[in-house]
Length: 456
Ligand code: PLP
Image 1 (tube, protein in one colour):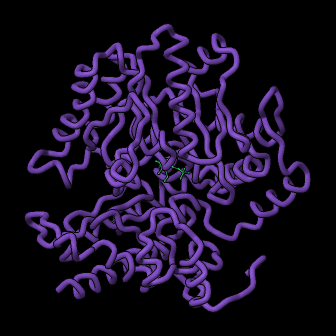
Image 2: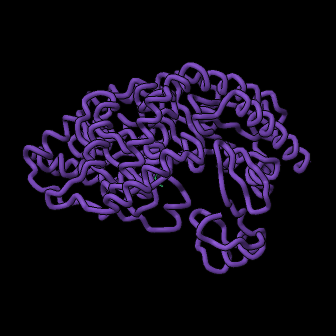
């Protein structure tokens, strides 16, 4: 352990419960069960303060795509911190790491993206998009085009604007989210909402909700549609094949901007540099974060396509927006090294041609488990739906907390899976091998066995 003295787990837990206000954590649980204290990590494994080695099926929070313990990335950070630890890019200043990273992102991105605005996180990236969208329409002489349509159960971050844009029930319930001009439509979640409809029919039906909403609001008032190619935090909601082409048609027909929130789906997660490529989406704006630096240092950003960039740069003059850490030199240097490592190590090709097909086939077999109603995956994200009755898709009583039970049993058994209600999700590091996938699926099955036994 570096920088901190070693303590017994219970001492860490007690200090933690006294002082640390955790994100997305029930404070009663912190007091009762204590946190799991993670002390170090290497490759695809994390280690806790009790010496347990745990396969990280979530790559941290969908971000440690290159796995833990890469000395090359740590050394790049160290060298950059000595050379230029900080300088801003406000007021006509710049520095080599941010310039080089912007150049590489322009090269890797699909379609016509030549510009990037850096942020410190995915939430800030989405706030930036809202600013860009509204600036664009104002400069276009259509300031009444204010409303952004997003989706229920979407996650676009935790700032007020990100949470307003997102469609997470508890976030809206806990805070009066006041960003005006945001509307939500339902999601393409076939397992939950599709009933007996064929997935393709359902995909079209859910996409057409966008058209209905545009017509309801008035097409001249709608600025943009904002969506994750695959809803991640909402439970790995993979849209049917018909969904995105119809969404694209509708955006084109009404001339509204299409924003792909690729905070999870970019940088190899779906076997492409950007998840939009997998679905044939042609976004005008792309949000990214997480995998850009493999989570080693915080970085996010907004990729700005030609349609918007031309207007913002040619007509706009100063864009009154920016963060102290926009384009932080060390974060940019690490991201640059992470993306170059992905290129040199052919990670995209490995995921697309080898790892993801293997993972998809093995993950699908979890559908045979007696308490699983559906197993779905795309690229390197997967979900399984815990049910009491496979034929009717009936869930366990909510009070039983089947999902959190399964999550805790899984971590005790040596695998991090995340619970979204009774949907278990994974997003393993992209450097996993077949042996790791076997271990992940075997441990997931065992966790389900234990969950079923505890619910019997
Ligand atoms: N957008 C999506 C799709 C995300 O999954 C997340 C985080 O999980 C965010 C935005 C917010 O990113 P951050 O936590 O870096 O602010």
